[in-house]
Image (tube, rainbow, N blue to C red; front, top):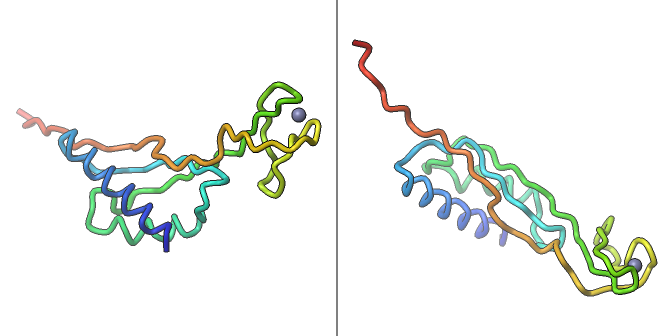
Amino acid sequence: MHELSIIYSVVSTVTKAVADQGGGQVISVRLRVGALAGVERDSLLFGYDLATQGTPLAGSVLEIEDVPVRIYCSSCACEQTLVGVQSFRCPVCGRPSGDFRSGRELAIESVEIETPQSEQAPC
Ligand SMILES: [Zn+2]
């Protein structure tokens, strides 16, 4: 499953980032996934639970932000957002376009980490 290898790479990137900043527990990871990235959201979520076991990401939440496909339409001379990925035509004038401006993203948008509080002795 190709989603699982993506998740493992996300987990290793985040694990390294946590170590770099001195440890902590990951609360959530937000991914930007384009409509054309070719990954299934359910498979990502399923793989996440497996891949995070025994890592600082265990128990954290994977949030997936869907990125719509945007094309540049030369007739309208502007970017248009496609409503689906069935046809790559400008939703305004109907002209086909292969000039994609977004929709292939697969990137870590943000990571929320709870850093351990340095505990002070009460007295
Ligand atoms: Zn157009």
